[in-house]
Image 1 (cartoon, rainbow, N blue to C red):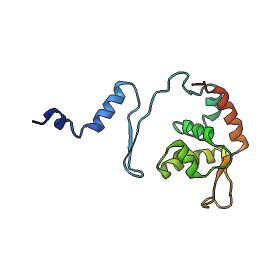
Image 2: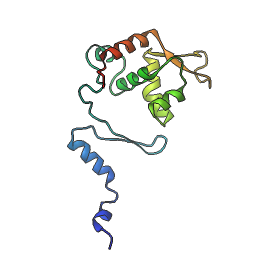
Image 3: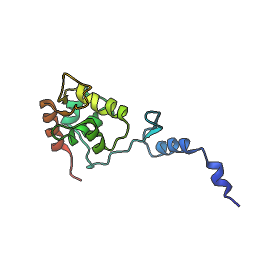
Image 4: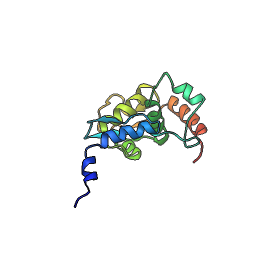
Length: 149
């Protein structure tokens, strides 16, 4: 005889995720339909686990706000020389192009931390991205503020 308790629980996953996030003090998950069904869960940053504070937070706040700030920082930390969008996405283990461009690439470009290698053709299939002088300065500050794991 099947376990009726499990059958009764089917279809409650979304509600369970929201409830459990609330119970541990996390932001509620975000649900979207970009490149399939996407669920974004936010984790707490443990002290000393790569948390950036102080001067860097002050420099970035106002130029890049909210959750985008951390995403731009992640992008800067992995950008080595000239890299394509696909290379960056692969390193960050991100599948959705639209999401990557909206949350990582565009804010970093708009803030002047990275630039196109072919600025006259932003949509070129040969397009790559590199740090600007402003991005290099921020990256040095970030590397100096991130606690080793």
